[in-house]
Image (cartoon, rainbow, N blue to C red; front, side, top):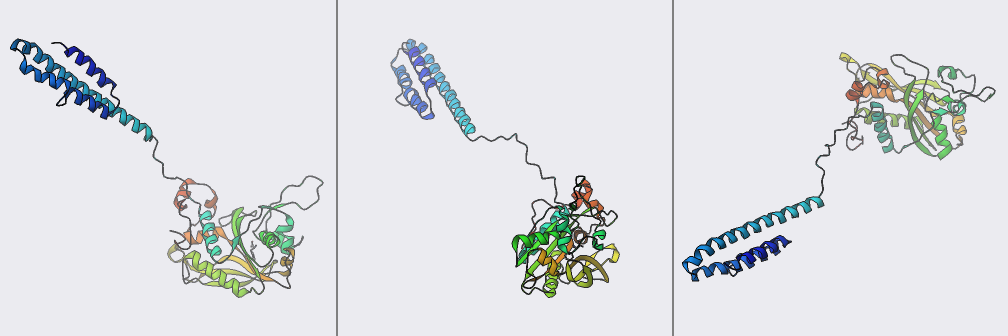
Length: 360
Ligand code: PHE
């Protein structure tokens, strides 16, 4: 039958060239729709002689099936291409490894520094800093510890090296955070309220001493700041830090060259059953030294002692970390033993704040 071969070639070509589902549908209607070319041809079969029909019938059916199959194949190909294009546009690499849980932890000393900073910040103290390699003048003289003063021997100082023939006093690894008092007064003047947490160094090593340890200095200078303000500040701090309402502090008269009067402060605690409890029991644990800033220290900081007065304290950070978190041996703090760090460390993303609770 004439025309079948032309129809076949023409439609297979149009199908192959259709670039979208819509274009392909137009081709389908033109060929196989009610008034499509192939449909019309099939309708002509009725008007043929039986002999003509015998060859034309199967040929037309074969053509219809072939065009049908070509349409389906092309539709599938167009859908695949559309999906490819979408996937290329919405690219996501599912072979990337899932993010592992962070393995590091926050060291208890860092945790405690964050906690005490949050508490003192709430009371209006800002953080001051000074160098760990400190001048002899800042570490001693300015704090009313002149050369030959016996307190210099008590500090077990590490001295830095000076070139031969250089007779100036050598720099020292600061033996306490008190030199930051001088630096803060010089930088800010009065009135001021600062804390200075940081590392300090003394040549000492046993169960309760390491050559490097941590202190936090506190300094408040104003017109009429008194021991009563010191006492309230420290009690308020301990209540917030140890998260115990019933803290009890004991002020013991003491002596420091840079404060007058001076007091050491102990906290009431119990060791019953080998477990430490703050605020109960008959034991006292020393946690800090304190006092009213000596007039000569104010002067060294550039502040007029006739017009201003203030309190200062220096607290052992490692000591209060051991107390709060029940850590028995100080030396283990600085051995970098991963098992110890995992056991006593804190989750990296839990930053302490007063509203959320300091130690969750
Ligand atoms: N600097 C003292 C020490 O290291 C502590 C202290 C600080 C005492 C401030 C009084 C005032 O022991």
